[in-house]
Image (cartoon, rainbow, N blue to C red; front, side, top):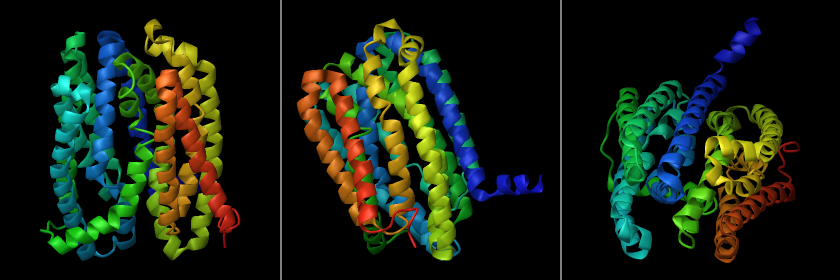
Length: 420
């Protein structure tokens, strides 16, 4: 009994439990809002929302700049030195302010280059606000110091408020644009609370230009990873929307949301383990290897189980969640189900093993290659097979990532189960 209590009190387990509560809340709230919005808005207007959300997620990566990985790793290694922590926080916020300004130019360029935004300006404004709210969140700080309970609670509260506002304010298809503004406002509320608590843990400093430049270099490799990953994940609805109608985007985007819900169930443990493995890589390498082996076994089993379950229940799930008018989503969802075990394995090999072993360069080359491969495949497959073509392109790109990482680690004799 005492041993079980000791395990539960372990920092990694506590953080993973906190993040799982967030994911469970996300899953439940999505299960409530997605069926409501898909029915109230219809495929065309729902597709517009998904297209704008995809653009917001992609654009937010410029503001977030990979700090969830690079800054949390740096913080995990230096969290016992308050001066370094304060300097890191100040520098990162300096970079984020700079990139918020950059995002304004990205939005302006998108207005002129993307026909949808040129005729639907309100969706562009909402997408930009959502992009800033997502990218500015200081989650990386709490991940680095391994204190995720309070930010998780704040996140859940903000999402509950968002769902309530959606049910009150979204009543007709013409209200579609309001979804983006509701989500943005709630994320900004969460951001305000998290920033306040963060500065109760460290000193507020003003960064110098040199510090900002050094921080940009610090986050560059992880920014490349995040930006390249987005080319075959979060940006796909946006990419697809350049070739097809909003209704087709809603079919792909809905399938992606469901498959991502399954993948997200694996991420809390990954996010909790990442700073721990980085910390142990210096203090206790042998233990870090044991944790990585355990993680690979667990993630592979869970990924295979969830992927198979999605394939089996896809028709029933689509009819219940989205409604009969979305049955075209079923084949798309079954294709995307293959992503679940692939991402489960690549997450452990890449995030939990290659990065702590400072293999950033080869890691990024793999991700960039997959992003470019996805774009090439999308250009050829999406116009022909629409949503199914986009799904096939994504699965091929993710398979490229997983098998490339396995091959690199084997070539360098750094497989998790053999590494000395």
